[in-house]
Length: 129
Image 1 (cartoon, rainbow, N blue to C red):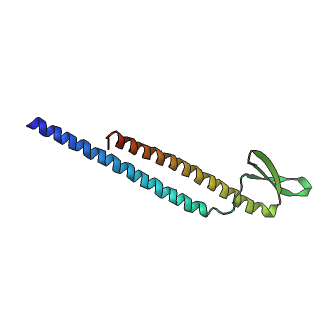
Image 2 (image 1 turned 180 degrees about the vertical axis):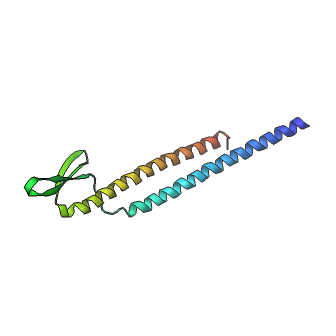
Image 3 (image 1 turned 30 degrees about the horizontal axis):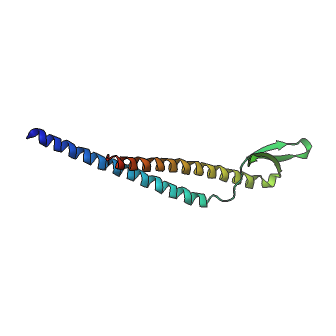
């Protein structure tokens, strides 16, 4: 009788482990969805943005000016910016970098979310969950 009881106990442990794995994966999905929601909210607050980098240039007797360099839709551009506009351009560039960072994180989270969903479905189909 001891062998039969051990077999039932092992099956019960395996079943609990499967349920535990599913709960962990579902919890991970919930965390991913929550962070994605936070990212969407942060994106709504990004504000004015533009790509590029701003460098200060000295033009001898003519004084200081700024050069804005960026690539958009595959085309490189350079623009001259008067000193009084430099602080606003710097804020826009910082906002663009923040935007890109958030988008990259969002895509990473969506890829992970998709991977977990497929893993859960595969385990359900094969009876592992």
